[in-house]
Length: 454
Ligand code: UD1
Ligand code: CA
Image 1 (cartoon, rainbow, N blue to C red):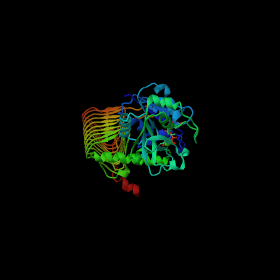
Image 2: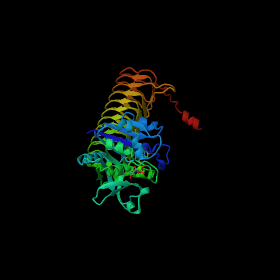
Image 3: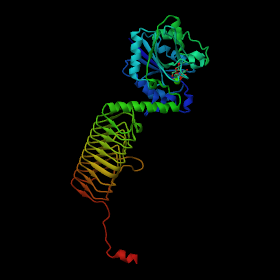
Image 4: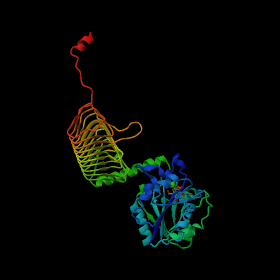
């Protein structure tokens, strides 16, 4: 059976008090709406349509390759929003999931189950509902004496008795697609908010004798709708806990789960330990037996096995096996660090390849460079890669020893097995097996200090 999804994201999000669209606010580094879309992966949906309001180029550019868009010019309610997808969906035969862009915690398993239950019951509508202690603000699920769902009533339209109902609408449903679009034509806006409610489709279908089911999920946390920044913080906490627990169950040690922030798109191997204050955002792959942290920030990185990263910041880089990083290192711009490398205290590495067994243990800037195997970059040495206009490359071949506090003025190549004397400023290529000294000669004026002191 064909499956489709409509994601509603044309709301104003006023309660966020933000210049940014509500659904673009991140949870563990990823925009809310991307969580919703990614959670639909693996469900084999034929079409995903996002309803946005006018001028949301930011949402469009974020999701452009993943979904179709329709624009809801006027915000006339959730039913009206779904209606905007008519041209793309109306004629299709199958099941349409409707989900809100502000409920990113609903798991893909739950959505898969919703489809399953909808299909096995041969229902016309299946509502994802849940029971909560505090139902205020949500639409209530109204059932008849046979316990069948007959309608959903919104908070603002509910009678005193209806307000006591604790089974609420999560805003996620499966619909018989063609029936949905027929029923939308019958919606009226004679309610407290003068909106065309999607939830009234239930009443319409029920009146025509259609079959309405509800799948009650018991995980109340899943269904949290994010309307303000208090809920955003709560959602972040729930998601963080979910991610950390899953990692721990898969063999990762997390020392302090409350103080560890790992994105849903991070994969970590077993026997790796994550120390407090570690933040891994974006897409990461971290191998087995690593020690990461404390106070470390990683984003879009790949790390091998047996790697230590201590108090460091690494973005968009790859690190091989058995390599030690930090404390206080900074890697960025697609640097590729090989196996058994050591990059230590206060070293910045940018757009650079470093081959195995090389070291830069202290106080260096290595930018736009290619460093061979078994190279030692002495303390305080710097690749001078920028002349104020352009950037140039430094090439250091295998087994080179760069003495402390050297400046390598790029473009420059240091050939195999060369030595650079400490304190040199190198602006010409150095041939292999040579020693380059580029500093003024020392002069000792014997007795001069004594004379000077007088
Ligand atoms: C909605 C449901 C309510 C449910 C709750 C769950 C309706 C009428 N009510 O209420 O039963 O308990 O979600 O969180 O559906 N949107 C549009 N266009 C519009 C209006 C809304 O795209 O014209 C989008 C919003 O961006 C949002 C979603 O639809 O993603 C829900 O809208 P919102 O105003 O948050 O509805 P609730 O009052 O929370
Ligand atoms: Ca909402």
